[in-house]
Length: 437
Image (tube, rainbow, N blue to C red; front, side, top):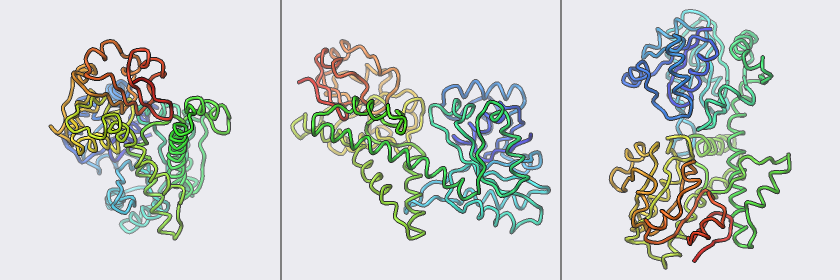
């Protein structure tokens, strides 16, 4: 099938490349001329494990194309995916201006029946709004479908090729048949397509992400309580996760959730509720707890240094909001760095993947190390903000030799307690006892 993807951000590029991998001819459209030129030359604009290989393979196979010309792509395609940004406004509501602008353009340009697929995360009722905009510009028949994505950054290629389910919201049998054809390679391997109405599909995405945010936040609350009563959150989460009604995933405590999805989607669902005179009390609590959780270790750093960290050098390992991505949107690292800078600390950070994105925001307010060990030179303490694999088994002897103080504040619970303790480190993590001096 011939498919157009409008928007080559994280969702659009992964979706387009995956659909090409499934044998479709895919035309990716973006208004950024330089970005399109780079992609034509085989340059992947985002970091995502295993994406580049699939991206290059499908360009070479002439199944994946890039253009700035929406009309050109539209004329060649039967199905148009909208993978456009829906950033939060000041009140938390999702900004649909990009989606509705492209819907208007499609209405003006289309010359035959099309299926328009909302891949962007959008509030309940957006399919109706997109339909209204397109219908105001054309008499040609069309259908609008909701098909939310459930990609985990860092595992997006794996998730796109092996989804747990495909959710399709549509009231049109013709559109359902076309979507079923696109996803037939999945259903052939037993992956279900769940058909539903458009509004239920739109809400499914928000409900899923918000529930996971609640689950993470609940575990962080349990972790904080563990410290009060002397329990070990690692043992608690193992005991909880062994119950198949709960499961082990998203039970790892840390310094809050971030990224492009959970914070935005929680805010948007809260705002959507208020628009209907409904209060999502559990989500409001989740958001408030997460704000505090992100910087919970700064108080511990101040406490260790007697209440004053002015002039102290803090090494920061990890800048991305999670491992295996260069995404720094709502990253806890930034909240901590900014707060530490406000309190007079000096920051030396290391993250080879996300560093360039942070430099665009912080510039020379902090220093950037070339290696994880270089960041530790004469550091008063180490702060671990991202769970990159290279941090999992460090050379503690070398760390101790480079640092001014053998002090670690770990926001991702990277190490068994005995490991830093045996190497003479003070070690403060989340939901576990503090070890060392």
